[in-house]
Image (tube, rainbow, N blue to C red; front, top):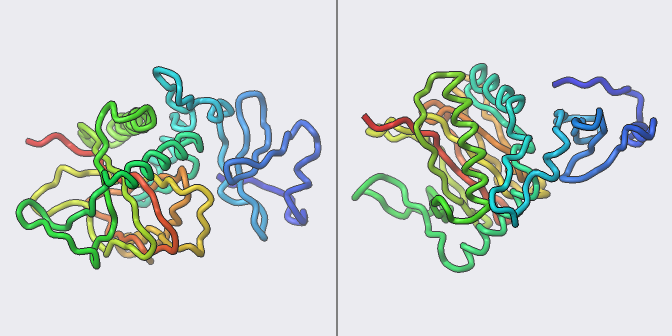
Length: 275
């Protein structure tokens, strides 16, 4: 999305007028009122606005941890799905900011840290079957697979990803049957060397997803996901909280760079049914 703002404006403050703009800053971004249902969300840098998207207002109220059946946030609705699908079709990968509401991101991050403190996360191995081994110089994260009914936050996240699975099937006829996902915690200095998400003898993983749980992450803290699109320069994605990265499992080599602070994420794979 491209939005025109006066290039001569020295700061974001010019958008305070008229008062109906209702300019506010929260969740790491600026927001301007469009109408009762929609707001324009953007970030402001030295050269003006960037990462601008239109956000449905109820996103801020959609996630209530104490309700029996939390609503799926409107931020994951058809318009965001379409942006993601367009990117995937054109580039083979997609990055979407604000994919999860901040409240859900914080709840998932807190759950991951509690589980890690209790020893529930274990160091991830490389290889398959009897050939699995711990190689921290290759892969240094600790993980825990998510299960249905694990928590309200995890169940809501799984429901959100189910809507994305259905959208992927409608758009690309991929035959995606389920979604598997785990928490991933990288301690400072830990990394994951360049790899593909699909094994040579197992082609069930079709689309990979990473959702970051690190609010207020700074680029200088490292920890980027480095994508290697075939025939193109490498692309680094900062692990900013609520951000989604989606790519084709068999086609996108990638790696996780070391960070100076603890790095949390949810990694997942949309899978086709085994023959």
